[in-house]
Image (tube, rainbow, N blue to C red):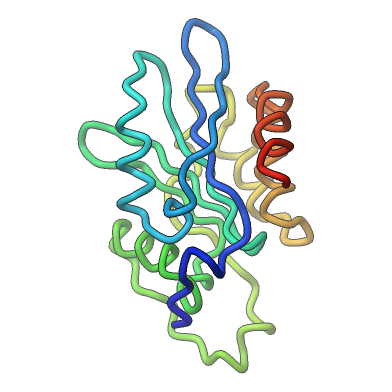
Length: 169
């Protein structure tokens, strides 16, 4: 495992809130890209009566969706093979009680990525698991493009774009 540090990771982490029919997107601290605990803590501190979830684009290699809930976060990892190289992916797999894939690093390029977690975690907001599956399964897209599709489907693409522009993405 590469044990990527915060300084080595490209990408972005955003918190998305839907309250009173309006979407708000805010940047999260970069530590959310390397620590599931930091990402969850940041999302729980949002204190919204509406839906709150996080979208993490890690190195444009994979994405994570985190939706805090009273009984523990609902999670989706777009590529389980990322657990071979990224601590945050290992954190998510651990939280899902899924073992890190046992794949030789030399064979990784020949393995089709697969998701782990809850494809339906945004279904109540208008993104059914079948559509999320299509987004996750499109391995020709980069993680930021997949997140863009999620944002477009749910109706917060403009808000996401504004935050990413400020972040330089």
